[in-house]
Image (cartoon, rainbow over all chains, first blue to last red; front, side, top):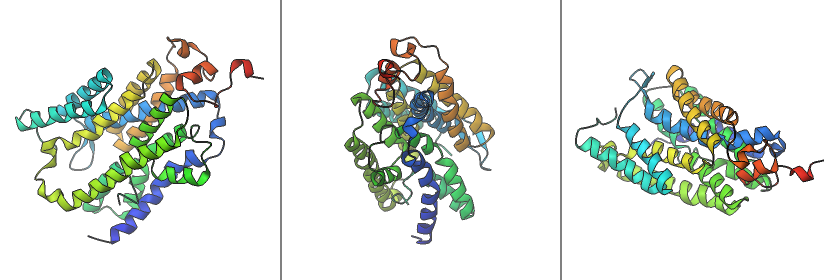
Length: 114
Length: 213
């Protein structure tokens, strides 16, 4: 195990912490215009949905360039979404998503990633 | 790295970058880009945590992840008030400790698992993110913000990079969401009014109409 990577981890922390702390440590953010506060309350669904969509619909090719990806992951994430909305149970949604992927890959209906 | 950086996507990416020989400054720059979305989380949580002492907020910031954000802000909304203990539970007990234990388990036992993708492990992250997004949806504006964020995120990711796509989706989605005509009573309330605030159960950040100067 390389201890050199500890220094890299510290540098990565230095690159990550400011974005995490800026909002929480900036005084008076709660006194922003009201529209801005309402905007911030919509950030969660937008970022989380963007994370999920980009994760399953965009893959990187060998050269590291993004390309559109279609696969069983779409169905799995859609099933998780539906199950979570219907039963209000994220664990159940995750189990269904993982189950779909396992079965699809085991039966050859879907290829393994990469 | 799991303890110091504590950012899953950045850690996975860093392994790939180091393996492919990208210089450290490039890795650090890409890490900053990947984690820029935390700025939005941090700003969204700030009004809720404004009464928490500065030092504790500084520690909270290090523990701010996608999961901690979604769990805590959903919890605050359900309660209708800030629950600092709830934040620590969501960030430490359900995220920080399991992430570090799982990292340790992966280091010790990962080689014994021939191909983790066969077990669908790669789908857990996007599925969890969409499930957490569902938990934050309380009206049409959230739905539109989420759909727009996802669509814009994918398009921008395809023409630039996934990290830029996610941040752009997170910025554009809420702006479009605010444009949606309101249907339910709270949504019909003008933005920034007490009725609008009650929808998000964010006490103290909005002024009631009858208290306004």
